[in-house]
Image (cartoon, rainbow over all chains, first blue to last red; front, top):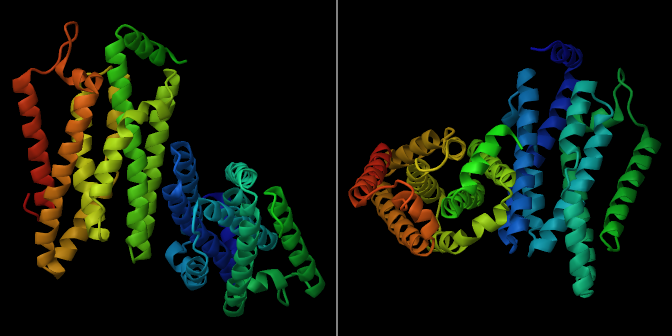
Length: 233
Length: 233
């Protein structure tokens, strides 16, 4: 084990609740990467142009690389990624079964808006974990060019047919609504994860005002993403 | 450009037909990797166990890495991978639309038997290209553990229900039949690719007896793969 990992491991060992919270954060990100892989592959299947298929395949492969990075990090801490992901299957699978894209545009919007919202939230939580875990979270959540691709595709589609904007704006609202309702479900059952944000007697966290400001930031970022696409949020 | 690539580039520049044949070989392999990615992702979607999904996602990501390796190699020779793949879309897409797996087992068998047969053929052709191209072909066609996975899954399914063996044996025969018929279609239209095998006035190749021996090798390997699965070919 590297010196850095030993250090991170020691920080974790101090506090069982903190440790479980950080494992939860990595577990939810790992499962998110795996399902993102599946959806990007599915988007690629819906794409009619070969260059788009290649782009989406490359993005999908990158999600697998992110999953592998998280798996390795957890292995170094003697945590099985399968177990770490387990608490999040139901919420993710429900979210995806309620929000199946009907075409490539809906798939692209889902990736950009849904994953963007989730990534913002994970980064907020990551402010409260050790530096190694935080760096890993930022690394695997960094966008690698997919946002630009989605923006071009959606704006082009709206230029070709203005009615698309109305349909996609509705779709964006539905995505965020479903995402929030599943996130609440997770929050209600995984207090180890939520207590990373709220803190404990021994550990600082956000008070209610700070949590409210965090939600404001999440919603502002979402609005900005929708506007970038030329969509009302 | 590296010295090696310059050398390979010079070998190619000498003979337009050879050059086009080698580009064809890389183009067909690149398109094969891209469609393999799609099928492995689809197999993952059909898998019910999370560990299987992870394995299939990893294998799918590897196909994207193979595609990238071929794309980079072609770029070094100033060939666009999209153009190199173009002549092979129709045959591949027809093959896949005629052989849609009904379940995970059929998908796994298709990957093992179909891709195994194709890889054997590409390696035969690669004997007639420059060492750099040949090494690349061998590298991207090397199996990275998927065969073992498929063997375990299929054998386990047959042990649980012996009737599975009959159904899969029929499926294996259908796959090879369709693959051969699409390969003939490609061979009939891409004589640059076939002339790599048969040679030209200036370049050695296989005579009819050698081509017949090659087909015997391909069929023997196929039979061996089916037997490894516990299936009649």
